Length: 342
Image 1 (cartoon, one colour):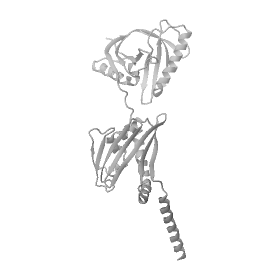
Image 2 (image 1 turned 90 degrees about the vertical axis):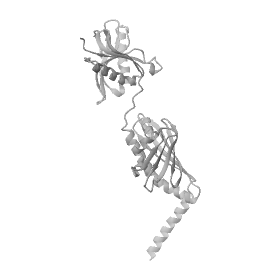
Image 3 (image 1 turned 135 degrees about the vertical axis):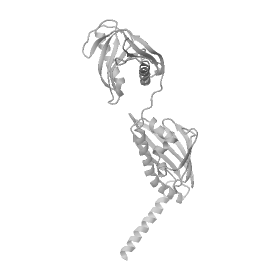
Image 4 (image 1 turned 45 degrees about the vertical axis):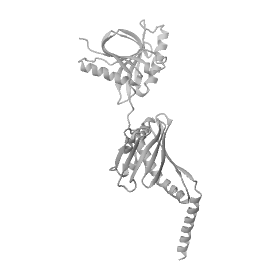
């Protein structure tokens, strides 16, 4: 009996301390959880900003995948909403509306639910490193009395793992999303043409596709130095001749070249190259370099459709200097695929 009495006293003390502790809790609390996603902010932002994507990651949807959902005509961005009707006692009926959307930094949603007055939740997307984003979800709660404080305290314990589950799903989905294609510029003069004979000083090596910009800078730098040592003057726009392009391995074998007016000599890592005039399928492209893939595809489709046999890897001729062109939409690239002469 004495031991039982001691246990009861301890339990009573814990209850009293809990009651007192709740009384001293702050009037307002913010539930917040975060996760690091290894991708750019636009991908997790899109998963939250487009309400039709919520079925891919929301823990609430997973509670009842048979719930009836109705979406606004435009289900993306500020003003978009969806309603649900569920037989699950924890979901019942409700409505979620995006009240603020600042791409790609933050989103605020307003939630209304049967049996609950409703509230707002916020999502932020913060760049924390190269190709890394901190995604945070938060909900601000305000009490109106002692029992409300107790409910908020319990709600925080319940919501933390739910927030964690949703953020983990956002991370998994975002890291699987493909990169969005850059907006395509303008393709002009697609058709048969002739690539004039060229002489150029060249640097050829294997490069990581993701680091081509740095590779080009290094390659053209070496070419300029060697050409200067031989007193060679540039006679036309810079070029790149792709010997290999393997996106599955993420590598390319690229020959960067600077056209010259006189014959040069191969020295060190730089070689002198002379190319005869050849028949090509060519196109001029006005736009950012990120859209060049679409142009290569258009030329290849043209060749197949019209029965031309491509005989070599393509040349890209950079008709203006990217270091002096302020607007990338005004970059001019001519792409040439050598074809078999009749």
